[in-house]
Image 1 (cartoon, helix red, strand yellow):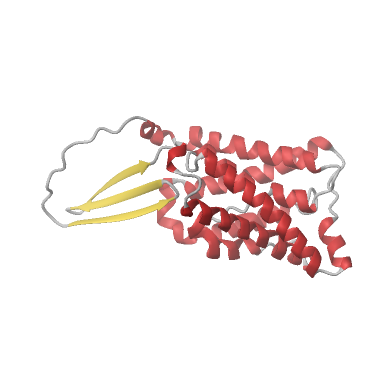
Image 2 (cartoon, one colour; image 1 turned 60 degrees about the horizontal axis):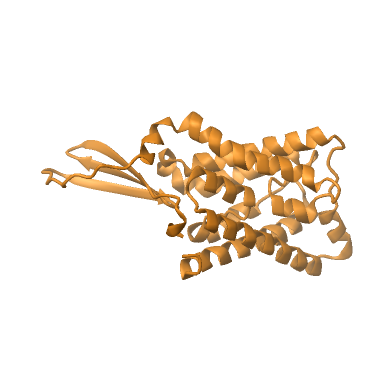
Length: 262
């Protein structure tokens, strides 16, 4: 259900995470526009509550990957937009007038095609990194997820900061972007968030297509010997590795993306 407590906590987590992205990220921009460390902080705080997306592109990509229901994705995006507005208001109250002008004035290139292409490329790299993080095969390296995300965001921001601002985040673009060119940046970002999950699913996940078919269940049988198991998952995806008599068996399971699961 949309109105249950779990959904409320997830939405509140995204609201607070996006507020901190704008607030702490804006303070960082005043000091050095090339340094982006707020992402690592957010992952440690909100990762196990809602995933700490704080970015509509990430939530949209998660939906197209099949790990987030449509209504929950809309709730995430709405909370992220509200969080960006709240973070902007707090930022303008904290910073002096000179600092506020530095944060909010960002003029990218003059070429429309270049702006769309650069934002699409940078956001594509960021989304592909998330697709790799969500992939069932990366569950053994989940403890490095926060560091991987921070390095990826920092690299993309460092590459694009002198060209288009390199925000790779629509809500941050709305706050800090140039008013006359925001729609070009948003176009590239949203296109990447829709295209990259489809490319990942078709190019790098062929062995998971069978999960879309009904799974035939059988009566469980007793197994003799030394048995052990390891379970790790992210969102609605679970990966189970069984060790039976020194032989490993992998079982993958994923919930349907139906709205009834939210």
